[in-house]
Length: 255
Image (cartoon, rainbow, N blue to C red; front, side):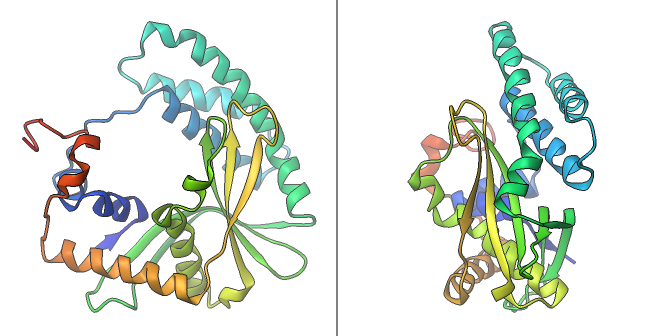
């Protein structure tokens, strides 16, 4: 069954032709950098600690960060000091993950980590699945489910980022399809971005709640349906307003 993920939808929303290049033609210019290596290593650490609180967080993060850095083909020499800083920042954040969860969600139990979601988009006339991975799903003693998506960042997110429509729709989709998969009442599910702030002086682990009521879910699904329809019908019109922000601008793939 053909499927769409949130990252694919985000690329389509940015520019349908950009989506074509990245998800259909498989052209990828960005190969990663020290920041993505840091984020991936911290994400893996969160996942493993959620499943087993007794694991050595230092060992997990150090090994994962080392492995991610080794995948990079060209690290500028001037990034050596930045990498040293990141190692210390990552270890500090890793040491705070479990306690931050306990403080925010007292008495929680882990339902799943990296749970795969592949669900039919029932609101769409075309046979398509929605595919995604839920970083962490926990349940509190009051019967509420909490879906958490980890995001590493520098000092945090400003209000514009926190309220960006497409950004918050990621959690809206997760809530909708998680409930569909498990036949759970949406009123019993809350969603959060778990912000892991590398350079913040305080509140280094922040759980930012995103609300998704029936109207927001409907609006999010309308965007998803529109993307599926156009992708299925190979409508890859360029959004020329985004050209200056696009990595393919003035390249052989998008002259």
